[in-house]
Every structure is written in C-alpha cells, then in structure tokens.
Image (tube, rainbow, N blue to C red):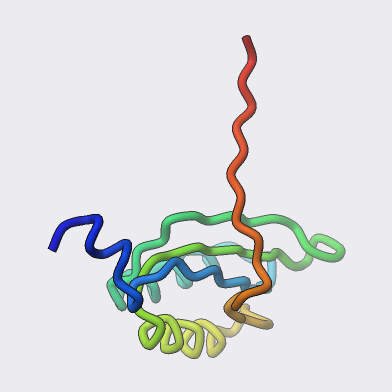
Length: 102
C-alpha cells in the first residue's frame, strides 16, 4: 500500500481533536504517550493558553482510523489533568498559512 492509497482510504482520514487541560508539567507527554501506544501519528499539535493561564487548549490533528481515535479520546479523558476532550466533526476549518519576508 502506497502513501497515496492511505490518504484516499475512507478509514484513514485526518481528524482534529481539541483537549482542555490543566496547565501543569508533563500533561503533553502523557497525552502523546496515549497516541503513541495506539500507533496514531500526530501530524499537527498546537497548544495555547485558555482562560486565566491555569488551563491550556491542545488542538491535535492526526491521520488514522476513527475507531482508534474514539479509544484515544476515552483514554485521554480519563487523565487527571484533562478537563474535556472532543473531536471536531464537520465544524472545523482547515487552513494553512505562510509568512514570507522578501
């Protein structure tokens, strides 16, 4: 199976997950470990402050099977420092931007 076959396979679509976490050391490592154990590749990761600095929002994009993603969300939701985890279905906007200085 080539790389183009995987990208056109309906079971391996790009999914976007949003996770609200307590802003504490080690949270990112624990979440990334869950993805790694399931063999789910993280293609994009954005972490930004949320609310008053005590919390952060992680936006993770990855390519894989929906069934595996559902298990990952369940496991991530069980972590102590995770307040909320959800997949964006149909309401997310995917865009890329480049800033080039000439």
